Length: 145
Image 1: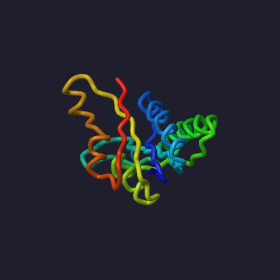
Image 2 (image 1 turned 90 degrees about the vertical axis):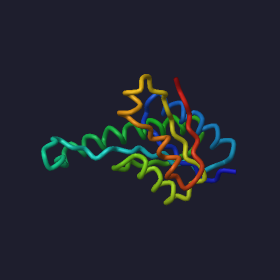
Image 3 (image 1 turned 45 degrees about the vertical axis):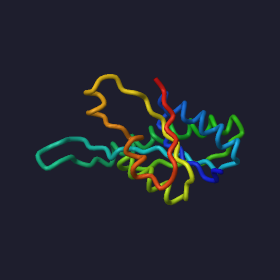
Image 4 (image 1 turned 90 degrees about the horizontal axis):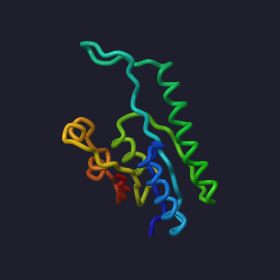
């Protein structure tokens, strides 16, 4: 079945639901579980030439993402599931797909919340939808309403 599972985890309600489903699959299949938190590259100001990178802002953001990731790892550990995780920076779809290739994942698990209204769907897009096109393995999308 699944030997290596990658969970894209952000601590949201959809992420929590995905964590629960991922936990059950990992326990059932005896899989190695990896959590990944994808932090977008922080930009402090936008000008005519694009954004400006800020090292101090990135460190603060990384601490926040690491805290979210650590919380997910603790929740898994409390249920007896051993997992490890990492915070990466960049485009969510690319980073998740790259990590899945690197660890040779058999399954990627992501959470998804249906967005109300066409404008919200158009503006935000869907990581899970785009990930299906770029993933090197199966993708389980855990939906919350």
